Image (cartoon, rainbow, N blue to C red; front, side, top):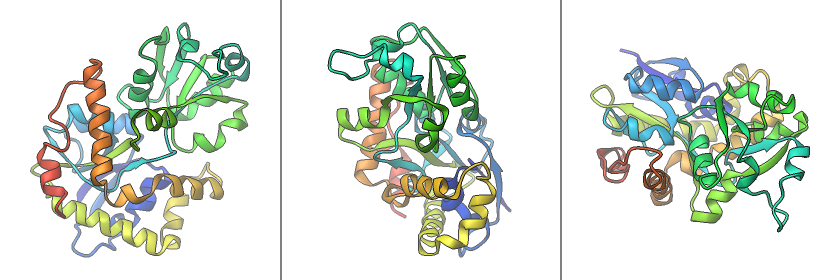
Length: 294
């Protein structure tokens, strides 16, 4: 039987899963792919809708009872964090004395975010905890930058390729939440996780399939290029290449101790702040004990 796999159409996901999706991973079952933004998969995974699914690390507290966290295939790294964007006139009017933007700048603002259980929004809430914005609106990712540029929102929280393109909209970065997180913790930024549904997919086997798919992607990048570009039609090829280079890294093949520490730090801080339910954490769950051994 085919396994259902839900991923985004972003270049990092299509690059990583190309070999698995197209039957080039020995021993792996056929895969039926569903493409959806992560705010959609976060919600659908709560219903057990998929066998393998890409979700936000911020959504794990609601999902680990039904899913194993796999130690590969996701998005976690350094220098790849979400950005808070605003118009230059607003950024220049809210500078702290040291010339750096302060979270107080948004205390009366309306901010557009790509999803209420995304890692980006969880990082934003931790960063702005002392002076949160007046209003949050969930907006489809592709609409955020144009809406901020048009003045419909005071600021916008963006992810993925927006890091390479926001200047085209005449916007400026108020804060790089990845830089803030790394500076505060010394850890990489945990963005997107791959989960395997308990009782439907053996996590050790699934981790093996995904690692082989990653290995093939790195060994022959051109093999995946038609697939990647077909789902990234609004991106220039150089943006696609930069996207993959940033988000597909050593943590994609293996979270390792630093990766798991980052996930545990994020969820632990969020639970301490009352933003997510407290969990035993990925390290204590069966996910690390099983899938980690593959």
